[in-house]
Image 1 (tube, each protein chain N blue to C red):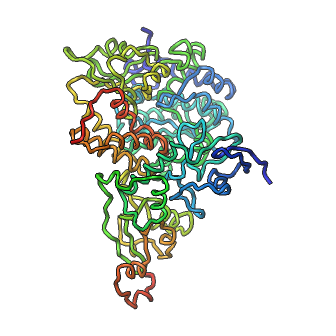
Image 2 (cartoon, rainbow over the protein chains, first blue to last red; image 1 turned 90 degrees about the horizontal axis):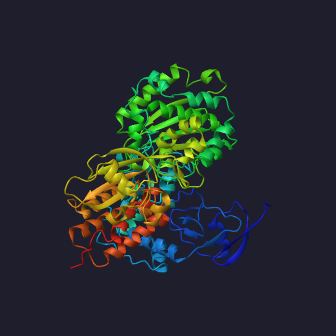
Image 3 (tube, rainbow over the protein chains, first blue to last red; image 1 turned 135 degrees about the horizontal axis):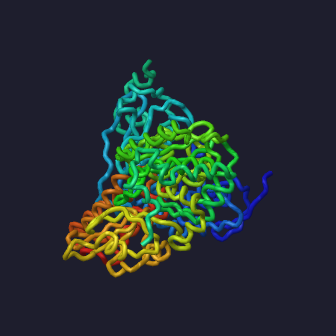
Length: 227
Length: 412
């Protein structure tokens, strides 16, 4: 048992092990810190910034998913600064990406008072539907760039490296090498990327067809990865 | 006016000649350092009060000490020569005019912190700087200033040069490491800081070109001498890049106690005849505007902070009334939207929406609520972005609005 330290979160004094993250301690306290890119089985990449909290004395807000607690720290998980950051990030996301299949994000938007139409005068990211293999479709209009699929495909699980990031800034997107169709990549169709996608951007082909109301061809049930 | 220190050799020696460099004090600091213990060198840099010249003003000696104390090996010394801040060109002048100084300073740094390998990350567009540095490194190696058993000592150190490919964000230290490692140039969440986990995950000392250029002079003349220059909180000489509406744009060396007016009207020769200052962008695109009324402010960090302006890398862009300021803001906004790496949401989305809104305001066709949108984006980027790019991307625009330098059109 490691030495315990004492800190204050939202006015409550708590004890924790020094290697715990703010998120772990807050979760144990029953506080609800929102999260999007975070996944318990993946390396935290700190991209979504929805879990940011205010640490008294720190210049900026800190991501609760990776920031480790320290003796005497005074942390606020829902201060006005934190609320504004979460609200604006959700508003910006909603103006860029189709969140219709992201119930968690829509619930966050409601909880944090985000006006999902506030930035709608801006450009949206637009992509064609990638329906290039028998196993899953990729609809990047629904992609929030949480990177989970890329990490799952790479060092965090599958070591296949079929997925990567393309573009920069607002135009960043998930892609394959040279944007090749999936069967021409190293993809082994393990489906792990589909399993970790939080927004319906990656979807099993059968689920996609059912959703479209299209009859599912029998051949699809028997499909095998290309050799 | 005091004689230049950092610019002492620039323009006076052949930058490709080691003999010229040696004739002007060159490599004497290194010889001196090799006769001392590494801790003494770190102590000297600490005592000098030198602060990082890349813009963050972090105490250099504290950084050196942190790396020196790391038990893990190998350690690296990295020179950040990815000078990309708009309006900043001081490092370029040093690299092109006095490349051996950077090499000497890096060897000293390596000795002090216990590193045997150094990298210089040069901005991709800096062709001449790259050529001069490459030559300096190979000439220094041949002369025994780099490589194994430097000058007959037990200390070995070598330098590799890497070139950027044009991304502004790669000047951010952790994105720079990613780039050297062959990855996409994106910043890492800190902590861990580079002193603990930097290049290739190892303890790394990373310093700006101008910061390193101060080191041999501190060694030669001592911390006390260095502290006599500048202000107590910002000792030493500083390079300023004066550009825009001035008679003699260029790099000027001065202590930070100099005022904006002395720098612009004195050293840079004032504005073109008949022109007056509309605004001064201090610190580049990531900086903030000073007004004509604020021109008697000294360039010390404290005085600048009082008027809401960062010293940054020392970029001073003078704007006269011939330039519509909204046009400047539009370009600043476009710059950040273009250069955001896209890693964290506040910057990836915020820089783009900020640009769209500034475009609307510049055209005089804002939507109701646009200024509030701008302020919300600015606060969110400053509070929640991973790196300095997003954290500063709204500074210039906000300062222009807050100081009333631009008039905000009313929505139709």
